[in-house]
Length: 115
Image (cartoon, rainbow, N blue to C red; front, side, top):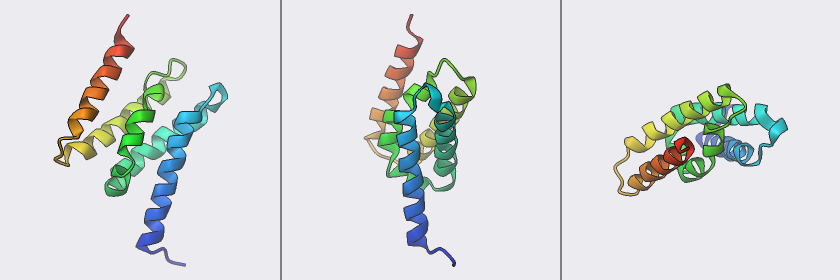
Protein backbone atom coordinates (compact mmCIF):
# COMPACT_ATOMS: atom_id res chain seq x y z
CA UNK A 1 0.00 0.00 0.00
CA UNK A 2 1.20 3.48 -0.79
CA UNK A 3 1.48 5.94 2.08
CA UNK A 4 -0.24 9.26 1.87
CA UNK A 5 0.98 12.57 3.26
CA UNK A 6 -1.11 12.26 6.42
CA UNK A 7 0.32 8.89 7.35
CA UNK A 8 3.83 10.11 6.54
CA UNK A 9 3.48 13.08 8.87
CA UNK A 10 2.05 10.84 11.57
CA UNK A 11 4.99 8.50 11.16
CA UNK A 12 7.53 11.34 11.40
CA UNK A 13 5.81 12.72 14.51
CA UNK A 14 5.79 9.26 16.09
CA UNK A 15 9.52 8.78 15.41
CA UNK A 16 10.43 12.23 16.75
CA UNK A 17 8.44 11.62 19.94
CA UNK A 18 9.98 8.18 20.41
CA UNK A 19 13.51 9.50 19.87
CA UNK A 20 12.91 12.33 22.35
CA UNK A 21 11.65 9.80 24.91
CA UNK A 22 14.77 7.70 24.36
CA UNK A 23 16.91 10.76 25.01
CA UNK A 24 15.05 11.58 28.20
CA UNK A 25 14.82 8.07 29.64
CA UNK A 26 18.14 6.55 28.61
CA UNK A 27 20.07 4.88 31.41
CA UNK A 28 23.61 3.54 31.58
CA UNK A 29 22.50 0.47 29.64
CA UNK A 30 20.63 2.63 27.11
CA UNK A 31 23.61 4.10 25.30
CA UNK A 32 22.58 2.47 22.02
CA UNK A 33 19.13 4.01 22.37
CA UNK A 34 20.62 7.42 23.06
CA UNK A 35 22.85 7.13 19.99
CA UNK A 36 19.95 5.91 17.87
CA UNK A 37 17.78 8.77 19.10
CA UNK A 38 20.40 11.34 18.12
CA UNK A 39 20.86 9.83 14.67
CA UNK A 40 17.11 9.62 14.04
CA UNK A 41 16.55 13.20 15.18
CA UNK A 42 19.37 14.46 12.98
CA UNK A 43 17.96 12.74 9.90
CA UNK A 44 14.40 13.85 10.57
CA UNK A 45 15.57 17.42 11.10
CA UNK A 46 17.39 17.31 7.77
CA UNK A 47 14.73 15.53 5.73
CA UNK A 48 11.46 16.59 7.37
CA UNK A 49 12.25 20.05 8.77
CA UNK A 50 8.68 21.33 8.81
CA UNK A 51 7.45 18.35 10.81
CA UNK A 52 10.52 18.36 13.05
CA UNK A 53 10.05 22.06 13.80
CA UNK A 54 6.83 21.33 15.69
CA UNK A 55 8.93 19.46 18.29
CA UNK A 56 11.99 21.71 18.31
CA UNK A 57 11.28 23.04 21.81
CA UNK A 58 11.25 19.50 23.21
CA UNK A 59 14.40 18.73 21.24
CA UNK A 60 16.30 21.63 22.81
CA UNK A 61 15.06 20.62 26.27
CA UNK A 62 16.25 17.02 25.90
CA UNK A 63 19.42 17.02 23.79
CA UNK A 64 21.78 18.30 26.51
CA UNK A 65 22.51 15.04 28.36
CA UNK A 66 23.58 13.46 25.06
CA UNK A 67 25.78 16.45 24.21
CA UNK A 68 27.75 16.09 27.43
CA UNK A 69 27.72 12.29 27.65
CA UNK A 70 31.12 11.48 29.16
CA UNK A 71 30.91 7.79 28.32
CA UNK A 72 30.64 7.76 24.55
CA UNK A 73 32.12 10.20 22.08
CA UNK A 74 29.95 8.82 19.27
CA UNK A 75 26.86 9.92 21.22
CA UNK A 76 28.29 13.42 21.69
CA UNK A 77 29.14 13.59 17.99
CA UNK A 78 25.67 12.43 16.93
CA UNK A 79 24.03 14.84 19.38
CA UNK A 80 26.14 17.73 18.08
CA UNK A 81 25.17 16.83 14.53
CA UNK A 82 21.48 16.71 15.50
CA UNK A 83 21.85 20.06 17.25
CA UNK A 84 23.39 21.51 14.11
CA UNK A 85 20.48 20.27 12.00
CA UNK A 86 17.99 21.78 14.46
CA UNK A 87 19.86 25.09 14.48
CA UNK A 88 19.76 25.10 10.69
CA UNK A 89 15.97 24.79 10.85
CA UNK A 90 15.43 27.62 13.31
CA UNK A 91 17.93 29.89 11.56
CA UNK A 92 15.77 29.72 8.44
CA UNK A 93 12.62 30.79 10.26
CA UNK A 94 12.40 34.43 11.32
CA UNK A 95 10.91 34.55 14.77
CA UNK A 96 11.81 36.53 17.87
CA UNK A 97 11.37 33.37 19.95
CA UNK A 98 14.55 31.90 18.47
CA UNK A 99 16.71 34.15 20.60
CA UNK A 100 15.47 32.07 23.54
CA UNK A 101 16.97 28.96 21.94
CA UNK A 102 20.28 30.69 21.29
CA UNK A 103 20.46 31.97 24.88
CA UNK A 104 19.60 28.52 26.21
CA UNK A 105 22.32 26.93 24.08
CA UNK A 106 24.85 29.46 25.31
CA UNK A 107 23.87 28.90 28.96
CA UNK A 108 24.07 25.11 28.63
CA UNK A 109 27.41 25.27 26.82
CA UNK A 110 28.80 27.68 29.40
CA UNK A 111 27.66 25.44 32.27
CA UNK A 112 29.13 22.34 30.61
CA UNK A 113 32.50 24.01 30.07
CA UNK A 114 32.74 25.76 33.45
CA UNK A 115 35.24 24.22 35.87
